[in-house]
Length: 137
Image 1 (cartoon, rainbow, N blue to C red):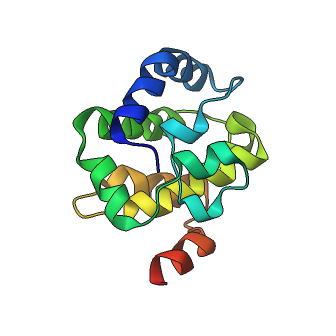
Image 2 (cartoon, one colour; image 1 turned 180 degrees about the vertical axis):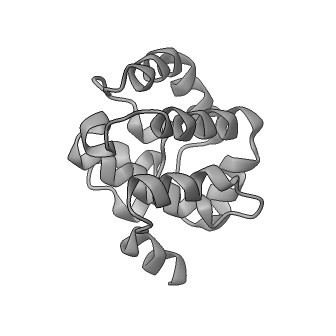
């Protein structure tokens, strides 16, 4: 897994662009891995595995960081204010990553309700079964 410092460094570069893209309703560049992380076991690329989180404990550490948590919450808020579904905002593959990420972080202790809200409103309440199964193992 990337260290929290690596997440901070990558987000410093890409957060303004990512935020602007989400506010406009269309993701057009490549930043999903370090701004909306999912479990490493779901990743296919080296980048996805590097920025993927190993388990709920690592997700908890990510969420316990106020900057990383705040940005992930802002991603959720920006998604919820869009009229378009996640597939249109992110594209099909990255919309699946959003669903996986929200499913993961929803399980963290003290997780904000907004992650569940994204799943309920944008994915008809459907959670990522692969993420849930991986968390059980």
